[in-house]
Length: 92
Image 1 (cartoon, rainbow, N blue to C red):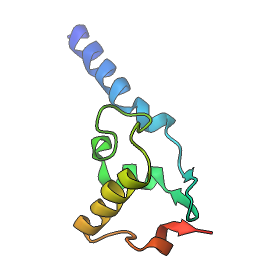
Image 2: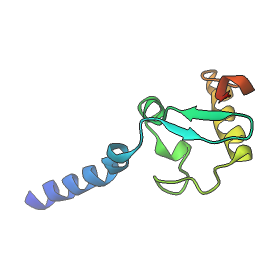
Image 3: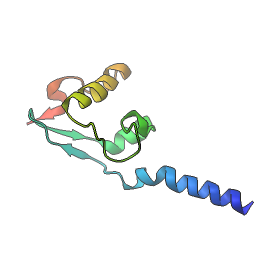
Image 4: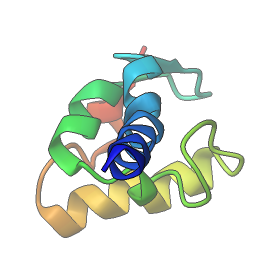
């Protein structure tokens, strides 16, 4: 019984470690104006880190204009939620 509890505890710590240390809001520089990304809000709404972090929680290696427009804007359009217009994300 102790082994099962230990395994469950280790899984819980591993699974939720990324959420505990993630930033609430991330500011991304962009040539057309700064993009403020509410990371914690997305975590709470999506409950699926792999939507954005395809390999593992942490930095996104492909993060850039093309990736963000495809992934972020694409998800917003698909879910019919969130900004999809340029000025909705890019603030000067």
